[in-house]
Picture 1 (cartoon, one colour):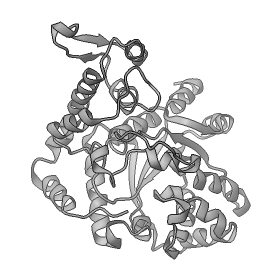
Picture 2: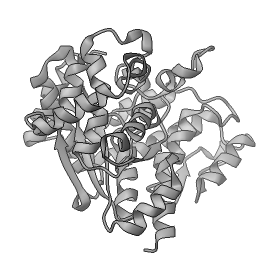
Picture 3: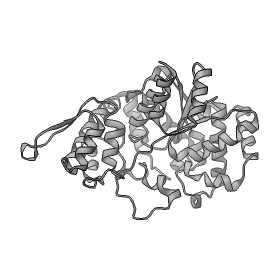
Picture 4: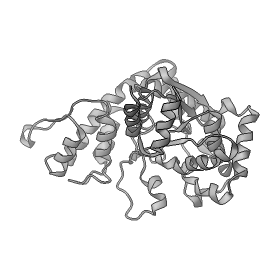
Length: 356
């Protein structure tokens, strides 16, 4: 695959790329660049972390990138997830890996790493301190969004440490590309700024789109809080579709989803069709009774969007069609967790109380 095609694949992943020219230079000079994304193990995984993550990782690895998936257990501990119980957090890390294995991720070019693997390395903590010495408390507080928190929510001292750790992760993992969500942009930009000052590199940032939650958005949202308020979140379970939700739960949640007629912007159901369904199918069929026009099939998202905007597809039919398609993609994951060790793991983490 030539460099232009590799860049196009990576740009499909990134809603924003900092910068495309740096990405080109990287691909021209390094045979197998390293990208990473990190997740706090803090409960069940929803489709943004599962299906969308697998789609994006597969595109990155197709482009010749080695992808490191980072279970940020110590970070979740610092962020007081699961009540600050490190053992529970680490068990959730085991569960996350099982989900990724079951949802179609290309495992040949993926490496799993945990924060607990690196915290015994003095060089890691040296990087954390170096970064903390080259920024300010005010700047760190402004990155609170990376922890799923507004600036006013950042109160514990450990939450000040967290962004310094996350920036250090990039250099400890030797990641050329930070391929995380748009909500992680601020700390990635911090890493780009301090990296060269410390004798490291300026990581390329490929920020993927954040899937919307199913609820109607609040009437007024501050610009700086928009990503946090609208994205899918496990702390709002009725507005998120989880990787191990049963088929009835998926259809029930989709039926309640915000889906304004003829409207594209802010419509989560159309988002799931675009970013998940059409990424894994060549034809998307919406089944309808004959009296409502009968079944209708689409070969690409643009066709679906046009039909919806024109009023040819009713919101109820779109919800049912997307819900059915998602259920097909989730079935292998349900099957994986239906017996043996994965089943016991799911039962264990399902008993945990999710905390913010």
